[in-house]
Image (cartoon, rainbow, N blue to C red):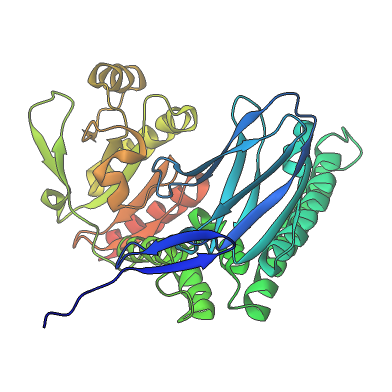
Length: 375
């Protein structure tokens, strides 16, 4: 006799749910509930997370907020353990909350969305505390910036350094005391684009192995791995891209035997254009002693690139993949997060220094070619 499979009917509060293999109903894991004052009409709530790595934001939920400002929606476990941006369609402002198991409570005002109080779960309480800390710092910073002549430049520098030190101490305290906290990991990740690979490695060691597969952890690890490949002592990653004529190619590796100053810039970058006269002086001073300059443009329009080269008198080597901005494959290869960005590479292709500008750059080149002349 053949076995007869019978669908199991489960009665819950008068409702019958058919349990089908692989088709189980998704149960609420995180409930977000609260009220935003100042709402005048029913509107849509948009919950999204930052795309990361310069990608597009990812919308994960749409819900409704009533005309009186009350709302409630649920999130499944699959999207939890991350921080999300809460926005109301057509209105300015937003706030961040942590999606985690339990009920997240929100109280805010549409005129000051960034001031919303988020609580109800351990991580949201922790995030709320951090928000209060940053607001206190912002008050001090704003007071300093709006104070006119109240503080000297030295005093302003001291206040800035103190605020930076306090921020780092707060982040370190979170990481060391709560290595299993997603808020601690998120706060540690916030200055990622300003961190050297050694600092990133140190931070990740605190959170491993608990978060070793989490998107925030993986984003930091990816950044560290890129920076490691373009740090002093590493062989500079090669590229073979276009020259300003739009046809011929230029490869970094073809300049072995010379010192190379690799300068990332763009025609639309005001600080970059301001640096070009100084680059010209250095090139003219050291070209006969073995210095080659390659200015890599993050432009995507060849006409604007050519115009800037001509206007600034950039008579050295110029290169670009013409993809534009941080989407450039070469910019990604070098972990570019802002320009100008400079690398100094020795005749064997090894990176000597990165991030040097102004007087520090001139001192470095003077040191290099002073030693070369003694050989």
